[in-house]
Image (tube, helix red, strand yellow):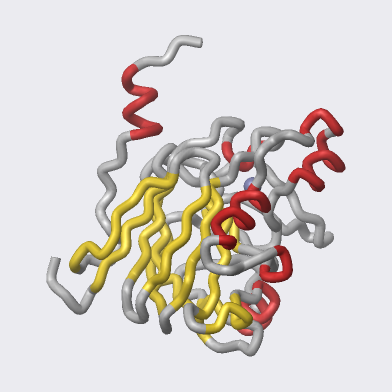
Length: 226
Ligand SMILES: [Zn+2]
């Protein structure tokens, strides 16, 4: 395989700006296949950048002070009466209260139905030889362990930048992405939250273009000038 410098530039060098300006609180890359987590203060805005394009960022959100209060895909979709996450979507906990709000979105629609990949689902879908492929569930467990989270705390997640169309008959697809290098989604914390992200390692379906690439997380405080 011939790799040109332009390929590296597209996949690994990101010059994106935070979606909402303010003092930079945190600016980190999530390496391909790696997990990431951080507490985000109420009012701060997390910009997630799809550095290489079509890279799924599997995401879970918890109340920072009570991890039993966590993101609910069911409550979120029922309240907004839309199967996709879009600009303005309020990400809700299981009681319907707001955890974060999508305040910027450069992809047509974002998924919260497709779920996270796991060794178990990989072997079921793609064969026993995939048992040893690293997966999002492992990233969630590894990152979650830093905060006292375990398997019981893993719930239906968000898949930023993953294209999961819901067909007219209700079936789901995991198909070629519609994101692109540098596309962003921005989330404002409505209270202090803990965000856990798995930079999806999946190579058995097109959710990462069969080529896991980095994500970037920029957290800004809009109340303080940049
Ligand atoms: Zn995954």
